[in-house]
Image (cartoon, rainbow, N blue to C red; front, side, top):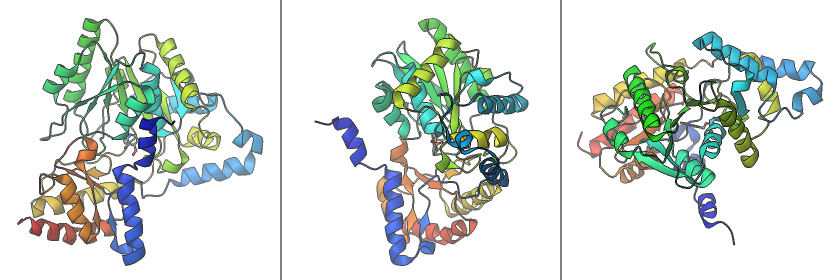
Length: 397
Ligand code: PLP
């Protein structure tokens, strides 16, 4: 007898993957160039040259055992030190290797946090809709805790504080935020962050235990219009930062990222040790050794992400001028407009007849919307616009 919940997860591909596979089948019939696949958040810009140089240099100059061998479970001290120094230079912090646990991208980082913090099945983690769907899987099936969803504040996709306050209770173990956000592209304002931090401080005192803020930040560097994303860790002492180089360095297949546990976290030593323990339990030890070394050299670098802002501008202006309604994203590479009928699944099905592959908002906990991942060639975005227009005409716009 297998674990039926886990079996069901394995049998059902995520909607995003389903659409992606549908696109691959259609491409065989009509040609890849005629498929407008906006389903997957797979960065389409190349990794910066520094990454290629680092890989070549490491391979050409180091002994194979020093490249491919095991490192410490939490990552090599050299790599963790280099990352800490890069954060300190940028944010004026004083992190060191002991604050970092290197792991396999943001997915592993957030899974580790949920696992490390869950002490009982009654523990709750709050997520704000719309949210990265895997949170629910990691919380409920990975950690065995409860996932509590706060409905979306659709006019701006900032935090719906009224609903949030209602759901906070002594079982609340952690709160997950993701800014810049997948799927909306919205960046939390300084006001949202300070209100959130004040509320969590008050409630932690009231309940007599910390409420951890799990800040999932794989899109931290992908921001537009010259805005600044506040670095959250110094603003709330019990923050755990989950970071990934997947998007900023365009290396999602290399699986490298980290959990940052600042010294300010209550019982810092135990929380860090619990992250290490979660790494043992889930097997997320010793992040890929070659890429630990690459990151040690490239932690401050970033891929040329200018195409995302260009695509955002073309798509946002194009769609809103046709009558689609959308909150303007300030980061990441997603647009999350309202669908032109309430049933977002029916809308996305209808879009398929133009080979426009979109992901319905229901999957992210915000029905009535669609996610458009525009990490594609600008030409694809431009050629898709007339198809979005045809679709809009079907709804009388
Ligand atoms: N968190 C969010 C919000 C994401 O959008 C993604 C990937 O798209 C992840 C986590 C997982 O990222 P990684 O590839 O680094 O595991």
